[in-house]
Amino acid sequence: MRASDLLVECLEREGVEHVFGVPGEEMEDLLFSLRDSGVSFVPVRHEQGAAFMADVHGRLTGNAGVCLSTLGPGATNLLTGVADAHLDKSPLVAITAQGGLERLHKESHQALDVVGLFAPVTKWNTQLSDPNIVHESVRKAFKLAQYEKPGATHLELPEDVAAEETETQPLPHRERVGYGVPDEASLARVEDLLAAAERPLLVAGNGAVRTGAAAELRDLVAATDLPVVSTYSGKGAVSDADEHSLMTLDSGAHEEAKSALAEADLVITVGYDIAEHDPAEWGLGDAGVVHVDSEPAEVYEAYTPDVEVVADIGETLCALTEWFEAVDRTFDADWFADRREHIVEDVSGEPADEAPFTVEGVLPALRGAMADEDVLISDVGSHKMAIAQNFPTYEPNTCIISNGLASMGIAVPGGLAADLAVDGNVVAATGDGGFLMNAAELETATRVGCGYTVVVFVDDDYGLISEKQEANTGESFGTGLTNPDLVAFAESFGIDGYRPETADELRDALDDAVGSDMALIAVSVA
Image 1 (tube, rainbow, N blue to C red):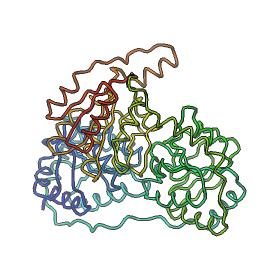
Image 2 (image 1 turned 30 degrees about the horizontal axis):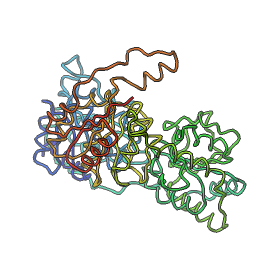
Image 3 (image 1 turned 90 degrees about the vertical axis):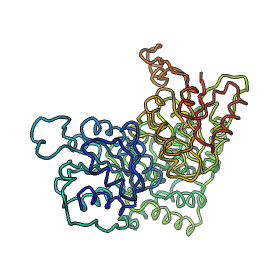
Image 4 (image 1 turned 180 degrees about the vertical axis):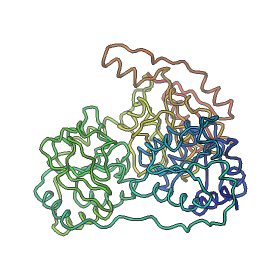
């Protein structure tokens, strides 16, 4: 078979169902290999959208999403979404075409050092310079992308290599390499700290969700009465309906969660890394810190754990729960109960019907229109902060936020990937700035037959930047926007469009749209 056929057979062996990408002439052999396979190639409108789709697929399923581009500008367009996946620990395999090997040693049309460009935003990447290394390279790309902590990998396929014949066969798919149980000495030190603590607190990070340890974390909370705060990527690890949840680190009009952190005498982070939220803002004081994760903590003056338990996160949490049950110890919940009550009041209050729409005011209606298991994909902007802080999340992996790279433009393509990956309903929430960055993927969504709801918060501004400028200088510059008629824009794709002007119209629009075919709701916000 051709090397391109072998690569596609390797993708099939890895269980890949969709490859998102933009075609190019240097990938002709690979495209026809995909045509003749069981893998669906989804042509998209921009390579960045393809990478965001693969990114969200990886976040939601734990299986590497795959995106594809041609060389040169196709590869550079792909780069932002690949970097987003890498910093948010989402498994992704990027494949780029390249010109023939005979012209890469000299200046050549569209030829760039793509392997060099991708090196800083991938765990591993390589050029497939020989057809006989394709099987090993694809297996390695998926193994490393999916291994804790997951991230992005990249394969470059020159067009002449793609056409060459090979007799090698795909390597067998193997189960992922797992982490072992926590060591007894580290556990004993954690137990000593817990025995001396009066106000311990848990911080749920990305890893608590990503590794499937939410059930074990919930068991620990139920057995101990420990309060939990989450990073933006840890939302849903413990349900925000649980009386122990203090929601996210910035939740509450008076930053109740951070004040609880400041009062805690022991903080146990679960699957947390410092890219998720800067611990310098936590005000920990003299509190002890325990780091539970699959990798050691980053070295940072503001985060120097007393104990690091580097092991399978779920196994570590199970061991701590067993210890608590053996010593028959729980903690007094009174010290954080008032904070919990204030947070719930902040996030659940709906504005008066005649009040102008705000993002915070819209979120209770959006939450009411969605089931617990439905998925919200948040773009980046001022609305992201409101969603992270004020959108109650009840199940793991049901509120997807670009956090590590914080890249605008992820919501519309991410909604497409989510709709293909999950059974529940999907809502993509975005500002007008982020929406128009990848709005063309609405065409892809309708062509593929997706059905999800896009909520666009319209303020004709890069609002978060304006807020920060005004806070610093009292004025803003360079942030104003104009927008097309977004309802007419949606309808031009054959999508239902809504422009609610009252609270009743908003609720009706959400009830009609969520769970139906493709729809867009444009909400003008103050």
